[in-house]
Amino acid sequence: MKGKSNALEILMVEDSPSDVFLTQEALKQTNGLCRVHVVSDGVEAMEFLRKEGEHAKAPRPDIILLDLNMPRKDGREVLLEIKSDEKLKSIPVLVLTSSSAEQDIAKAYSLHANCYITKPVDFARFKEVINSIKTFWFGNVTLPPHE
Image 1 (cartoon, rainbow, N blue to C red):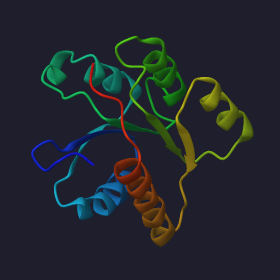
Image 2 (spheres, rainbow, N blue to C red):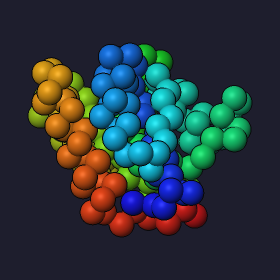
Image 3 (cartoon, rainbow, N blue to C red):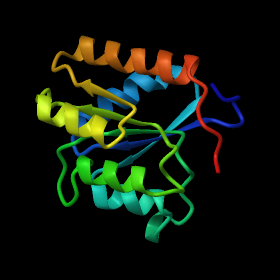
C-alpha cells in the first residue's frame, strides 16, 4: 500500500447507491490510505479516466472497480476501451458485478479484466468480499507505476 501522503486512488464505476455505500463503508477501515472516486456509468468513467469536462483534475486511479450492467455505456464497453488505450491499459480492472453468467465471466476475461468477482447479496458476505479485495490488491499486490 502507498504511504499516507500518497493514498491509493480507486475509481468505482457503479450505478447502485447501496453497493457504493457498502463498498465505501468497508474501505473506510484503511485510515485514509485509499480514496474512492465514484462515477455512476461508463460514459462518466471514461470522462474521468481521460480527464475530460468536470473530471479535468481527476487523479489516475491505481485500481478500477467496475460493474458490468450500467446505463449509457456498460462495463464491457468500458473494459474494452480501457484495455485498448495505451495510456490506461495497465490500470488493474476488478469486475465487481451481480452477474454470475458464464458468458459475462468469459467476456470480461477475454477483454483482459484482472479479476471477476460476483457481488454477494448478503451484507456481511459483501463486506468480506471487499475486505478480501482490500487485503489482496492493496496489501499484497505491487501495482503498476503511473505512466
